[in-house]
Image 1 (cartoon, rainbow over the protein chains, first blue to last red):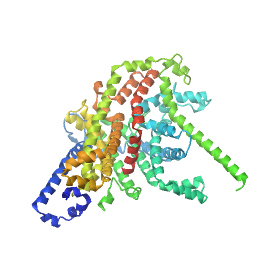
Image 2 (tube, helix red, strand yellow):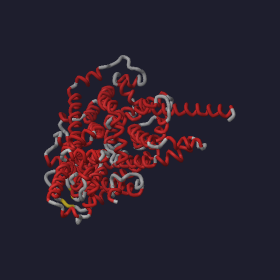
Image 3 (cartoon, one colour):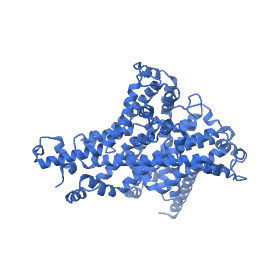
Image 4 (tube, rainbow over the protein chains, first blue to last red):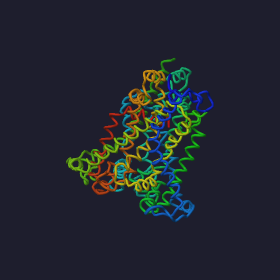
Length: 333
Length: 284
C-alpha cells in the first residue's frame, strides 16, 4: 500500500472532506499521514522562503514606501505623505509620456513585429534551401544580452559614422539619413527597430513550435478540396495557431511594460525623455535622484498595470487556451 | 488538366518560391549585417571605419581583439558571469525540483493555492521589484556580494522552473512510484533516486533557461555591484563602451568577444533552450 500522502489525486477527496473514515484511521495510518506532512513541509519550505522573502516582500515593501517621501537613506521612511506620490505621477508629463510611449511600442510590436515573425515562421516551415541555417540565424539575436545589442546599435545608428547612415549614403538615399537615436522624432522608431532585431526570432520560434502541432493532414485535405495556400493559412493554420499567437502577444505586452535594459543602453531615455519608459523613469528617481519613495510608487503602478493586464488577458483572451498556469482554474474546478 | 495550365502553375510556383527566398534572404541580411559589421569592424581602426565602412580591413588590426583577450578584467567578468550563472542555476533548479515534486505528487489542503501563489510570480517582472529589492538587499548587507545577485535571480526564476518541472513530474506513471514504495523507498528516496534521474531532460531544459537568464541579466548586477571585481559581462560591456566611446573599433572587438560564450552555448544547447522557451511560453 502507498502511504496516503503519495497517492496524489486519489486522496484529494479526503482533503476536501475531512470527515471521511480516514479521520478515524488506525494510528499506523495517522503516523504515515504525519510523515507525509513533514515531507511536504521540508520539500516546500526552502522555495517558499526564498520566494516570499525576495519576490513577495519587495512588492509589499514597495507598496509601503510608495506612501512616503523618502530619500532611501537611514532606516525606515518617516515622512508619510499618503497618495501624494501617485497624484504627482499622474500630473507628471514624463510619466504620462512613458505610458504613451509604452502603448506605441506595444501597438508597433503587435502590428509589425509579430506578423513579421509569423510570416517568417510560415516560410521556414516549408521545404526550402537553407531553412535550418535561417532558423538558427533569426534566433541568434535573442541569445545576445540586451547590453551587447544596445551597444552594437548605438554604433550602427550613430549619426556621423554609423553603419545605417553609411549604407543609406552608399545607396544614394542621403535623404533618409537621420540622427536616429539623437532626434526626438525618430528615436522611438529606432528603439523599435532594435527591439524587432532582437526579439522577432523568439516569436518566430514560438510560431514554428505551434505550427508543428497542427496535423499535416488538415492542410492536405484542404488542398485536395481546392483551397489555395492563402486559404489554407487563413482558415486552418491561423485559427489553430490562436493559442500561440495569444501567448506571444501577452509576452510582447509584458515585455514592453518592463522595458529597461535596451533603452537604458541605447539612449538612457533621451533625448529629452523622448524614449523614456516607466522603468527608466523609476530608475532615474530611485537610483539617481534619491527619490526612493517616488521611485517605488512608479514600481507599484507598473506592477498594477502588469497585474491588471495579466489577469484580464487570462480571463478574457486566453481563457479557452491553456490549462491556465496562472489561474489554475481547471485544477480548482 | 491541360498542359498549358500545368505549365502556368509551375511558373507561378517558381516565381513565388523565388520571391519568398528573396524575402527571407533580405531579413537574413537585416539580422546578419550588424553582426558581421561588428566582427569585421573589430579588425579595423576607427579611422578605417569611417573611410572604408563596407570593405575588408586594410591593414588588419588584430590588436583590438588581442588587447581585450590579454586584459585581466575581461576574463574576470567571464569568470564572474559563469560563477553567478552556475550558482543561480543550482539554487533555482534544486529548490524548484523539490517544490515541483510536492506539487506534482502529493495531495494536501492548500496545494493549489500555494501553486497559484508561485505562478502569480510570473507576473512580477524583475524590473518592477528592483528598487525595493535593492533596499532589501542593502538592509541584509549583501551589496557587492554575489549572493545579492544569485538569490534574487533564483527567487525570480522559481515560478517558471516550478511550472515546467511540475508538468514533467506529472507525466511519470504512478506505477513507478507505487513499485518504489512497495520496495521500501521513502518519499525522499523516490525523489532522489528515481524521479530526478528520470527527469534529466526536463532538468537540462530548466537549467539552460536559468543559465541564459542569469548570463544576460543586467539590471540587478547593475544596482548590486559597484565593485568592478564583481562585474559580470554585461556590466563590463557597458563600462567599456563608455570608457572608449570614441574608439568604435575597440568597442566592436569587445562586444564580439563578449558574444562568443552566449552563441557557443546556444549552438551546444539549442534543443533544450528552444524546447524550454516554447514549453515555458505555452505553460506559463
